[in-house]
Image 1 (cartoon, rainbow, N blue to C red):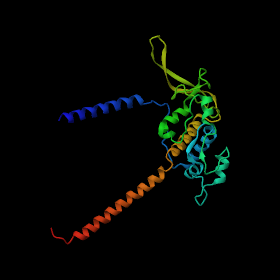
Image 2 (spheres, rainbow, N blue to C red):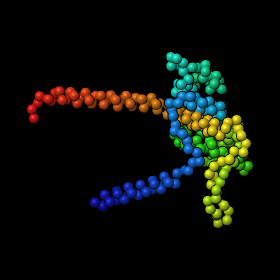
Image 3 (cartoon, one colour):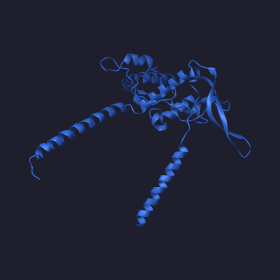
Image 4 (cartoon, helix red, strand yellow):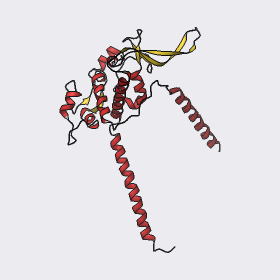
Length: 260
């Protein structure tokens, strides 16, 4: 009995601790991200374009090959084969072949030298950080003269990454509210939104759509076989349902003449 009581106490303690950490880890995002849609191949292709043009200089996706990416986002011909010429012309800029891994143009040593950190590979980025976090992160850059690259981020404070999408987004400044005053009577503020002070090549709506496409593509890259796995799962479930019905009918046929 004492052992059961101890087990129950430990279980309650773990549940309480998990709830506390979950509450502490909760982030109030500024933007609501539309639902990820891995079936929207047009969005995935646009996202791949943004990644290869703006992100691949520093970040790689070395656990995916160009051919796997092209097949997953629908860059194939009528026979279902990878459209190699289109892929090489639009998504490969550093001389790799279609069968090569998607590696960053920047080496680890260069990344350490320029940014002071190890530049992360983004193959599993959407698994590690979750799509909504990445979406708000990409939309959350603002100017900060105290930082090395002149930018900061509302989601990842003091981030080492510059705003590589500034030409698309334009320049935005944060809108804040005062949460409280510290012991030195200095205001502690929270960013609740942004105000665009210089337009970019995209309107705010167009830029949000572009960042959604990029996050949608990163979600695909983190699990490229997800749709195929789901299709197989549906087929298996349907097979089991049909098999169960046939087995039941066969059982009735065998037992209908057996007296109880």
